[in-house]
Image (cartoon, rainbow, N blue to C red; front, side):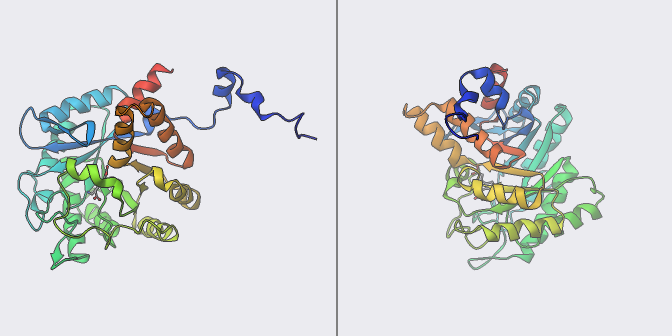
Length: 327
Ligand code: PBG
């Protein structure tokens, strides 16, 4: 009978070679997606205070960064734009000469072997910092969805490879799919931020994207932290509407959701290790309280183990360095 003392699970742990041999989860550089923040100007590289090692970059600097990212073997970047002028309609989001459209064109012209994924939302572009059009303090759904479809088409026209709507309005995937198809972009996949929670972990991102809402919060469209069944309904709706890939966000505190989404739908599934997850690890390591590299790799491994096929992470470059060293 295989019980102790004949059964000893430690047998497979006594040396690194055997541990390698039985390891179940592997992070590959091809799993990683690197987020980038693009601003107007030239030769701009502003470090984000709450995210050491992450920068707002002008297009010229972002192109160089993308060349490095591609040369490291990271397959994709996720672009966020910070506009010059914000207004109530978030007009720069769908302006053919907006910051993101310029960045896409430059990166696609100058960098080979790199997918450009674009975040589709209005919050970086609106003067009030909300994810859509407002009526008083209400974020309007259907009116916002029309603008998101317009934004997605303008990203595709600029050359984006994958469109990633992060707004959490109802019906946006269907509207974006229809608009893309109508304009002939039938081959452009949609990676939907399908289960996106109203999370405190986005704090540092809002410094990076300058998108803190002027009043209120995002709880009328992002999901309640306490809900899991609802996440499955959100993901199902997005798949029915035409999402090609789905995302769970944040990652680390939502591994149960990630696991259930992957198990239930078996879709290509991304997880976003968000700004706050990054900053917590960075800050604790700066204090000397944790080993940064070890906790970084542990957090990424846990996300992969839970079911992620792709991980969007500010650690992408650092993780590739570790993977290359340990080859
Ligand atoms: C919205 C968007 C946000 C993030 C990605 N897309 C912010 C928000 O919903 O408030 C957060 C990413 C992060 O925290 O790293 N455009």
